[in-house]
Length: 555
Image (cartoon, rainbow, N blue to C red):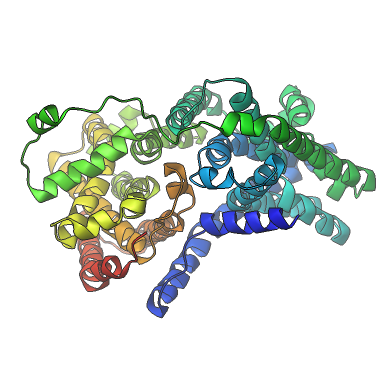
């Protein structure tokens, strides 16, 4: 038990962000954390809670009010498996500490138990927030008593245990019985394939959203085919047991819930005793079979370029050649139309292309305002969600010293990283927005203004993300996924982007609604606002961003 506690504390400390080295950075981290809480966590909690509350109130007269909550919990568990499999594989088999752990007199179950606990601790935050929001929404809708609220705390904390344990069991079995996965690169490629399969599934399901209505949907859920729920109850038995525990206040369900969690964990630890060392010995952290080029061939391929261009291409090659970065930082930029289309399909009153052309040709101010504010919102969110800028310095990892010793000024390196964060989201936004404007027959001058505003918004988010990452970059990580998922700077940047979008779009709408301001003046105001935002972040970069890099300790 002492070994388990010591290992767990060590793994958790390795996963977490390093502590800010001085008071100035600590204050900035606190401010960014407040932005994260109020800009991301609270809106997500409120949205999910309201959705579950509406489903519960609709199902309440039918006497099957837990079905909506049950559905949400199953979806959370399913996504925990999808996004947790890569984390568990890397934590169990491809982390850099493996070679140091194997020589110690440790049992396999001690290593796996400690690593699983650390992974659960790290992965549980978002699941905890979602489960808490769902439970609160259900509790308010179903008017739960105090005892039910107290019992719900058990499941709120432990619901992701079984999904992550499934990932652990699958990883141990695959690594113990096959030679299929012998490197981190293979895991990353499989994760990319699963991610694109999930996207294709999402695209295929959008058609079913056409006539979606929350009332009719939950009534169908209550009276129609519940095959999905029955199958998911078998796969995740903890979900119905958890709901029965706190809603029916059933002691037997509580004992069964604890028992089924303990059973799955016991199976994982037993398999680890039998198979873990067999699967982990002899692994490599990455593919090493590539044939090294000869010196002559290497020198023949060298071309002299400017420092800015060479540094820019260095970052681009890392992003393109690393599956995790390619999926999360580049491919993510081009998926946003799926969600826009889904929102369009949900609307009960949908505008056709002919109507949009008619309204825009006749200078319908609401449509013009929708295009203007929509482009700002999309540009800001797409530039923030891809982690290109808010992870730009953290991606250097143990090679951070490269930034300090190459004969390239910090400001040049900063601009090159910012340009990487601009070029991909700008391309992803404009290749959709410009054709859409042409189809709606937006005047050329307006298209040029929209393009300028979009580029200014993306530039602001890019420089802002790098500045945030410079305050406290996560330079210690075992794999590329950890540099993304365990980096709070992406979360902070996203919170500021959401806050900026709300201020600009909501403020712009109310300004337009309560004044007689023209669209042209609105465009000028947005240009001035974005120019001021860009000047501010450039001032912060010059004032303290470069100093953050200079004072950052090497790893």
